[in-house]
Length: 281
Image (cartoon, rainbow, N blue to C red; front, side, top):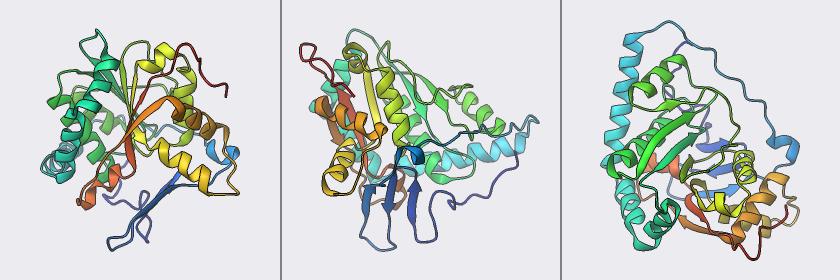
């Protein structure tokens, strides 16, 4: 696959609005920002994913340039106010206790990264990858890292593997069971992926094995409450059901403009009551 121009034209439109199938994050040129889930119907949430055509020919110069881009994004993120706030939040006793509960007696938890996007073409995916890399470096309880996006090229795959990460070769559509403690890293993914992840883990024990970095479930609930004509899709209904036993901690983005890559993201942990059972969705 030929290298795309390094711009964010498919992530941000000309009015600086973040666009994805379940969110509209309005980012005006000035300070005011607004984010809310996009009203949608079930048939609009289901989109056929096609794997990017592989670039089988090894291009060392192209891979070297991508590594340089990743290093630039990594340094930018590590020195940002956002990352300072991010580290402080994880180390806050209330949040860290949630991670400890997920870990239980296990020494580490696997990290599964879904929907990272093209790290070669756009800065936002590189910043998200940089956050994964920094977490891996800072916390010894972060174990092996697996990455998937249908758009990843052969070049991107080789670079990720050179960084020590495994690239998932089959589109799981978010249906990974948390048989052991697992951290799912899914900022700005579609509601259908959260639904699939929750559905396949709709068991008290597996849900307790699951830590999630992704879209705010509270925002889905708020949008459902305030928009009178909104009809929740089956995907959103499971998210709303999970809200009844989820602990959510909003991620503070700080003043850094590039941290819009994490805007409206949250940490989510699930602690369902065995006696009450799970909601029927």
